[in-house]
Image 1 (cartoon, rainbow, N blue to C red):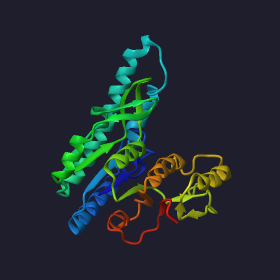
Image 2 (cartoon, rainbow, N blue to C red; image 1 turned 180 degrees about the horizontal axis):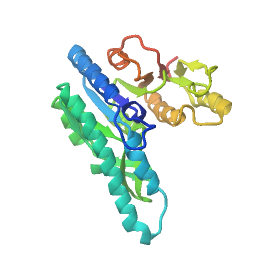
Image 3 (tube, helix red, strand yellow; image 1 turned 45 degrees about the horizontal axis):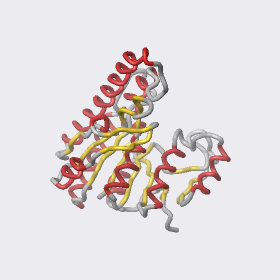
Length: 266
């Protein structure tokens, strides 16, 4: 089994004033996934980010921040708007995958997961596993959920990956981003950024965090910390550039791809 994460930056146009899908990338990636499934017939779970769809309402209504009880009605509306926005993105993604005859089934995290202080603490995966056993490709995404301490919270696709991987024990986890992998600096801003082929411990993280004093490539450090937890369990992950044609297909088929591997095996 493979868990494939498609970053929101790959599927949506981040610089657009309104929520907008990147049709070219989505159609290409959907086709590459279809080609891989036809080639290897492996079990697959897809996780995608919220991109330009979910982030604006979540930010506007400050979902996940403490609030007074009289703010609850407005917070509920913000929760609903955020959930509705990411659901729209998911529908567009599922439409593209179904267009390639991939039997996907949307499984919203908000329907079965809860968190405590923004970390997933409950989510029965029995139905999820049943869909996989019946030959479906579950598609889950960054979402809003009920939180035991904060009433509501946003859980990222990266956190969902970790929760799924711990419980489903996939052979590998693949993260499709808009860069080739991990660098010691943001490669979009620094021409001298050095590519890192292997991250095997938190010590590796410290080295480039101190160099940049920022979250490398807009949240990359957070992704790696989630994946290092999986590496400790023996689950290897790789970060690739999903913007490049055939990279998703090659990664799914275990062909040679430029990537950063997150693994405790050296």
